[in-house]
Each structure stands twice: as C-alpha cells, then as structure tokens.
Image 1 (cartoon, rainbow, N blue to C red):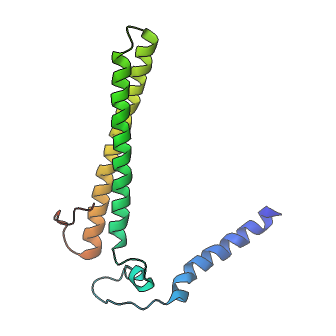
Image 2 (cartoon, one colour):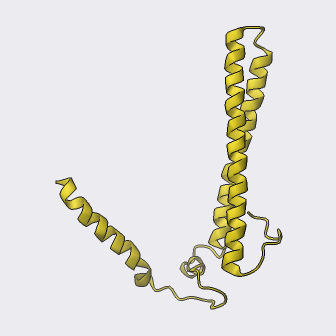
Image 3 (spheres, rainbow, N blue to C red):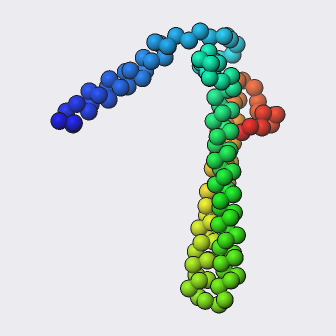
Length: 138
C-alpha cells in the first residue's frame, strides 16, 4: 500500500515545496545586485545577516571543533604510546590510533581548504567583487 502512494506523495511534496516561495510573497527591501533571495530573512524578521556568512560561520565552527578533537586524539595516542612500557599490544593500539587521528586531521584540513575555496568563489560569483580577505568569515 505504501509503494502505491509513495510516488504520488513525492510529486505533491516537490510541487508544494516549489510553489511555497510564491505563496509567501515577502516584500523585498533592496533591489541592488543580482537577486538571490538574501532579503527574505530580514523581511521575515529572523536576521539581517547574509545566509552565506551564517553557513560559513557554522562550517568553520564545526571544522574547528573536529580539528580540536583530532589533536586531542593525537596527544592521547602519543601519551598511550609513551606509557605503554614496552607492551607490544599497547604500542600497536597507540600506533593505529595515531594513524587514524592523522588521517582525520588530513581530511579535516582538506575539508577546510575546499570549503574556503567554494565560499570565496561563491562570494565572487554572487557579488561580482573579488574576495580580498577583508570578509574573513569564510
């Protein structure tokens, strides 16, 4: 029975989501630059900050916390290795933990580099201005 109504539900859901912005009809306060819908937050009373900056701040915070956790794991693995007392099993476990933490750090730093590149390109493409580093939120 679920398989019978699932495609109908999906079509209605997609149509409803696509028609929702035309039903809201929020009044725009600015006509400058390319229209990206960035004024909707201010028109609804939520926030006046650019959505791109909010997303960049969230991503940077998450990556910062993950980087801190990875560094703590590296320190813990080094401590475990140093206090193993020659126990081969404990040394192997510490080496595996250290390798996993280093791989995690590489992934996190790569994610940060990719995010920074994408955000700067998005800024340049949507504003028509080059990113100079003055807006260092991303």
